[in-house]
Amino acid sequence: MADSLNILIVDDEKILRENLELLLSSFSSCRTLQAENAYRALELMQKYPVDLVLLDVNMPGLSGIDLLKLMRREGIKTPVILMTSYPSLDLTVEALRHGATDFLIKPFTSQQLYEAIERFKKREALEAREDYQELLRLLKQKTREQTLLFTVSDRLTSCNSVTQLYNEIIRLSVEFTESEEGVLYLLDLEKGTLFPEVWEGFSEKPPVLRCDGSNPISKSVRESLPYIIPARGKEKALLVNPFQIKGENLGALALCRQKSFNKDDLFCINLILERAAPLAENFILYESIVLNLHDALRALVKALEAKDPYTKEHSERVTNYALLIAREMGLSTEELEMLRFAGHLHDVGKVGIADAILLKPSRLTSEEYEIIKQHPVIGAEIVGHIGLLQEEARIIRYHHERFDGQGYPEGLRGEEIPLLARILAVADTYDAMTTRRPYRPSLSAETAYQEILRCSGSQFDPEIVEIFKVVWQEQLQKEEKADGFRESVA
Image (cartoon, rainbow, N blue to C red; front, side, top):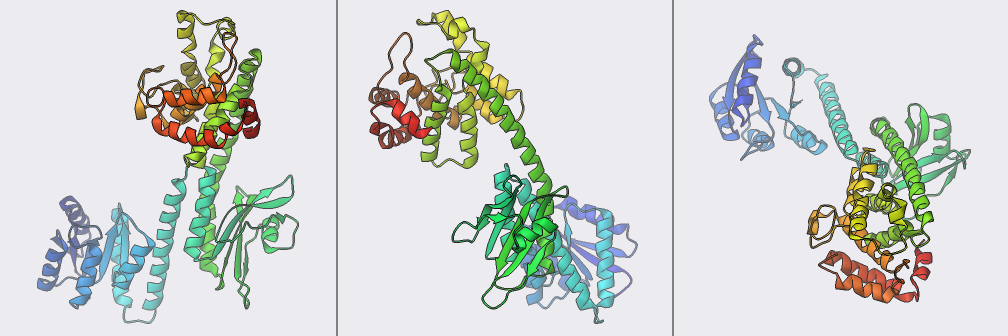
């Protein structure tokens, strides 16, 4: 190879080609050519001597991988350094299979570019020597590690709850180690047990384990050490790694497969758990704060309801009705939890309403009703000021909006109203109708049901009313009194 390098830059973005040319010109031994697409690159390689190609993966028309394949098919063996913003294990495997020699992950610095060029020079010098194969192996390993790190970080940080995080830990672990079963055990110090929090590949729920047990999972947690047990006959191989947060054991991850595990598998699992630990810590702290806050505000609501015998346990019943509807709709666990929180606290804003109005034994005047209509806004402000529960605050704020836009506080209509608020509106109205007030008797379950149906499309979302019909026919219709149903769902 000549002392001076002829480098072909292949990228569809002109500004990137020019920036690379500028960087390479600062390396005294480099001269450059530019191509805006794969066809132009192929033409230049056939016309001029090219020592190295800097090739972008994502280009219109033929991609970088397509050009690699075409080069090999045409017998062009010019070394290629791929440039990509989206590294992945699949891309790495395919690129190496078609002859790529190195990778640069965008955006990269001039130092990283310089190091890649220097690696290329060394690789060229070593190509005729036996240790080139070792260098190639290390390159593949490094690329795999970088890709693993990128993928793990991206997927774990996209989780929105500790439950999602635990499920993603299992999915990543099983996927990257090609395991057949995986389970994440969490430690219960009070009971002295390890319980399976999430699992994959098992035909039934894995067993609860004693912390003082002699099994490898319990021993791994006690000793804070990983265990690798090779496959023997029909017994699958086992890999166990403790899951820790700042040195404190949270549990353990266990994986099984037919072939034995190795140090690369252990490296992979360590990386996943190390990246997950600070995220788990934040989620656990967040959920602890939310739970304590929920309990405090719920106690406040119960105290409010205790003042009025007619609304006692109202929030509990409304929450139960709303959850029945939401489950029938197939909503996610996260949505159910938001609805549970908002349902319990949907009337918390009544703390800002005078008792003389709240407990008035007769119908409210129009002025008093306007004051009562402020309670969703007050409630949303109470919950919203916390900063952790913005979605729950929106549900509370809008649970008195109507589907036709005639509700309050903002007159939202249709899908402008959050879905969970639309569900809560049906549940809240149903309970209000089936509860006695000092100025009117309670309606029967059948009468309240018919009124909900009558208001479909005006007060309520028709799709939610259809789901309510299913819930009512399967649950409420079987009860002679609403109280019977309330006991059954409590």
